[in-house]
Image (tube, rainbow, N blue to C red; front, top):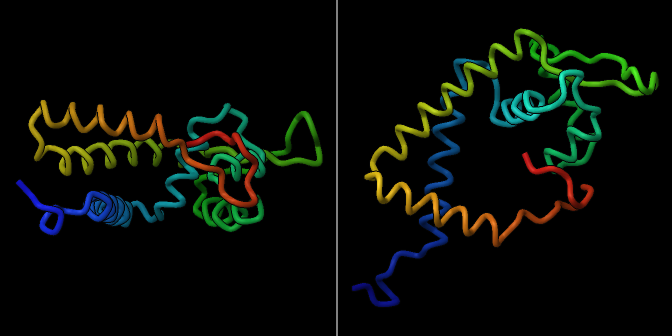
Length: 158
């Protein structure tokens, strides 16, 4: 049994696990030529309607200011992973959607992510894995992500 001084700090352990997972994910993206932030944008666009999203809606889902999405969308457009098209409902607005190349890469990223995460969590037996899932579901349900400053409250979490 641990006393207070020898007990591992739960927050530190969780942050270490989070950093390890993020590092593994970042490293796995290198061959694909995208950053974690770019892959997140691709993922959000992959779940969007076929026509795409307005920049402001993408920003809401990323929990960042709309002006901050422009740079990453420009980078993805340069890589031919997204396309900008006029919004048929409002000619002044533009929709951002995945290109065919972007859809293909998103499928590859999904496989890469699953493989990377499976290799991280495969150290747990089935019972421990199920218990971790159960505990994380409780924490996520009881502690929803607060909105970030400059973002609309209630924006979709993706």
